[in-house]
Image (cartoon, rainbow, N blue to C red; front, side, top):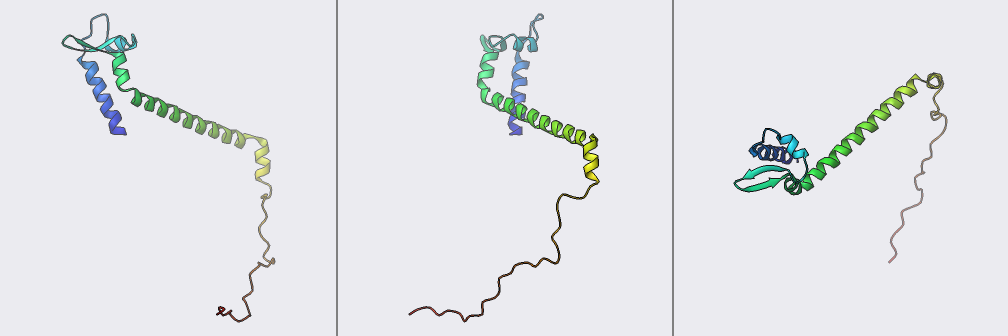
Length: 127
Protein backbone atom coordinates (compact mmCIF):
# COMPACT_ATOMS: atom_id res chain seq x y z
CA UNK A 1 0.00 0.00 0.00
CA UNK A 2 2.84 2.40 0.83
CA UNK A 3 4.55 1.70 -2.49
CA UNK A 4 1.29 2.50 -4.23
CA UNK A 5 1.12 5.91 -2.51
CA UNK A 6 4.75 6.65 -3.38
CA UNK A 7 4.15 5.68 -7.00
CA UNK A 8 1.04 7.87 -7.06
CA UNK A 9 3.06 10.81 -5.73
CA UNK A 10 5.79 10.28 -8.32
CA UNK A 11 3.25 10.14 -11.16
CA UNK A 12 1.45 13.25 -9.91
CA UNK A 13 4.75 15.09 -9.59
CA UNK A 14 5.78 14.04 -13.11
CA UNK A 15 2.45 15.15 -14.53
CA UNK A 16 2.61 18.49 -12.75
CA UNK A 17 6.24 18.96 -13.81
CA UNK A 18 5.29 18.43 -17.48
CA UNK A 19 3.07 21.50 -17.46
CA UNK A 20 4.79 24.68 -18.56
CA UNK A 21 3.37 27.33 -16.21
CA UNK A 22 2.66 30.82 -17.45
CA UNK A 23 4.14 33.69 -15.45
CA UNK A 24 0.74 34.53 -13.95
CA UNK A 25 -0.13 30.97 -13.04
CA UNK A 26 1.95 28.46 -11.09
CA UNK A 27 1.31 24.74 -10.91
CA UNK A 28 -0.16 24.95 -7.41
CA UNK A 29 -2.41 27.85 -8.37
CA UNK A 30 -3.58 25.97 -11.46
CA UNK A 31 -4.58 22.92 -9.43
CA UNK A 32 -6.41 25.14 -6.96
CA UNK A 33 -8.25 26.96 -9.78
CA UNK A 34 -10.70 24.08 -10.24
CA UNK A 35 -11.34 20.92 -12.19
CA UNK A 36 -11.08 22.66 -15.56
CA UNK A 37 -7.56 23.93 -14.85
CA UNK A 38 -4.96 22.35 -17.16
CA UNK A 39 -2.27 20.33 -15.38
CA UNK A 40 -0.45 18.95 -18.44
CA UNK A 41 -0.26 19.35 -22.21
CA UNK A 42 0.72 16.71 -24.70
CA UNK A 43 0.92 18.37 -28.08
CA UNK A 44 -2.54 19.87 -28.51
CA UNK A 45 -4.13 17.60 -25.87
CA UNK A 46 -4.81 19.06 -22.42
CA UNK A 47 -5.15 17.05 -19.20
CA UNK A 48 -7.27 18.87 -16.63
CA UNK A 49 -7.19 18.69 -12.85
CA UNK A 50 -10.67 17.12 -12.98
CA UNK A 51 -9.47 14.30 -15.26
CA UNK A 52 -6.49 13.70 -13.00
CA UNK A 53 -8.67 13.60 -9.86
CA UNK A 54 -11.17 11.27 -11.54
CA UNK A 55 -8.41 8.83 -12.48
CA UNK A 56 -7.22 8.59 -8.87
CA UNK A 57 -10.55 9.02 -7.06
CA UNK A 58 -10.34 5.66 -5.26
CA UNK A 59 -6.86 6.31 -3.94
CA UNK A 60 -7.83 9.83 -2.88
CA UNK A 61 -10.83 8.47 -0.97
CA UNK A 62 -8.60 5.90 0.77
CA UNK A 63 -6.13 8.62 1.75
CA UNK A 64 -8.91 10.85 3.08
CA UNK A 65 -10.32 7.95 5.11
CA UNK A 66 -6.84 7.16 6.47
CA UNK A 67 -6.36 10.83 7.42
CA UNK A 68 -9.71 10.78 9.23
CA UNK A 69 -8.84 7.54 11.04
CA UNK A 70 -5.41 8.86 12.09
CA UNK A 71 -6.89 12.09 13.41
CA UNK A 72 -9.64 10.25 15.29
CA UNK A 73 -7.13 7.87 16.86
CA UNK A 74 -4.81 10.72 17.86
CA UNK A 75 -7.73 12.68 19.32
CA UNK A 76 -8.88 9.66 21.34
CA UNK A 77 -5.34 9.24 22.72
CA UNK A 78 -5.08 12.92 23.62
CA UNK A 79 -8.47 12.86 25.34
CA UNK A 80 -7.54 9.76 27.34
CA UNK A 81 -4.19 11.26 28.29
CA UNK A 82 -5.80 14.48 29.50
CA UNK A 83 -8.45 12.57 31.45
CA UNK A 84 -5.79 10.46 33.18
CA UNK A 85 -3.76 13.57 34.00
CA UNK A 86 -6.84 15.35 35.36
CA UNK A 87 -7.77 12.30 37.44
CA UNK A 88 -4.23 12.14 38.86
CA UNK A 89 -4.38 15.82 39.83
CA UNK A 90 -7.79 15.62 41.50
CA UNK A 91 -7.90 15.47 45.32
CA UNK A 92 -10.43 12.62 45.25
CA UNK A 93 -7.99 10.31 43.48
CA UNK A 94 -5.28 10.97 46.08
CA UNK A 95 -7.52 9.99 48.97
CA UNK A 96 -8.65 6.73 47.35
CA UNK A 97 -5.14 5.73 46.35
CA UNK A 98 -4.03 5.46 49.99
CA UNK A 99 -7.05 3.44 51.10
CA UNK A 100 -7.33 -0.35 51.10
CA UNK A 101 -7.92 -2.10 47.78
CA UNK A 102 -11.54 -2.63 46.78
CA UNK A 103 -10.98 -6.34 46.15
CA UNK A 104 -10.51 -8.94 48.87
CA UNK A 105 -8.08 -11.82 48.59
CA UNK A 106 -9.46 -15.31 48.96
CA UNK A 107 -9.22 -16.68 52.47
CA UNK A 108 -6.66 -19.47 52.89
CA UNK A 109 -8.96 -21.35 55.27
CA UNK A 110 -11.75 -21.59 52.72
CA UNK A 111 -11.69 -25.07 51.17
CA UNK A 112 -11.92 -25.51 47.44
CA UNK A 113 -14.50 -27.86 46.00
CA UNK A 114 -13.15 -30.91 44.26
CA UNK A 115 -15.07 -33.82 42.92
CA UNK A 116 -14.41 -36.97 44.90
CA UNK A 117 -13.16 -39.94 42.89
CA UNK A 118 -15.79 -42.52 42.05
CA UNK A 119 -15.71 -45.56 44.37
CA UNK A 120 -18.02 -47.75 42.33
CA UNK A 121 -16.71 -50.29 39.86
CA UNK A 122 -16.61 -49.26 36.21
CA UNK A 123 -19.71 -50.14 34.24
CA UNK A 124 -19.58 -52.83 31.66
CA UNK A 125 -21.23 -52.23 28.34
CA UNK A 126 -24.60 -53.98 27.90
CA UNK A 127 -24.67 -56.90 25.45
